Length: 234
Image (cartoon, rainbow, N blue to C red):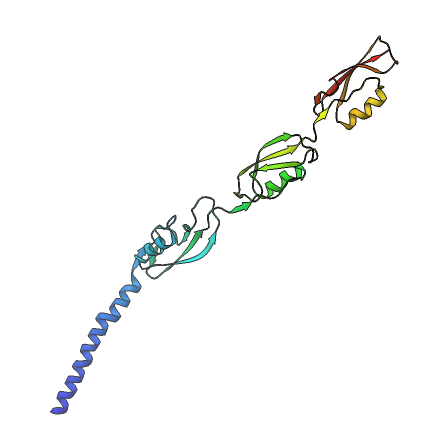
């Protein structure tokens, strides 16, 4: 009889333990594994907030990529996978892509470089040319870069605009052509990139075929490509 009671007690103990395991361990696992939730939208949230929001639905946020983005602020979510409102089981991993903000590039050193070549360089870097201004320079050759705006080493973003200050070379002053022949004048004007325009023959004292009047006048400031008109003695 005593052994029988012991057996009964052991059976009852196992029954109670089994019920407790079923109620407190097995059933919660079954229910937990089978629960389906909707993935919340965490795009544009900070990483910490996104992970916290996902945790509310028993989902786990994992950073799979960090990349530059011209719109989304640094540290915020650009992309999530699965997408918002997707129905998934709890415990699912949600892949997150985090923004590094817009990519910055330092303004390159372009002083002394031909303007056409400099334009190609900045376009390859993703910048645009806003304006090209021209100034005289005694030290920088014609059509080469004197300066840039912004200046060298400035941090910039793709799409930003740049202004080039381009050399027109030194200030040109009109030479005195008096008593020179057309043959002598032609080479001189070519060297200054000036254009010989109308030539009139007039009566006058002096050597035939030489200049008596010129426009622009001597020492007048001229620009490359300007036209020079002459009067020469018949």
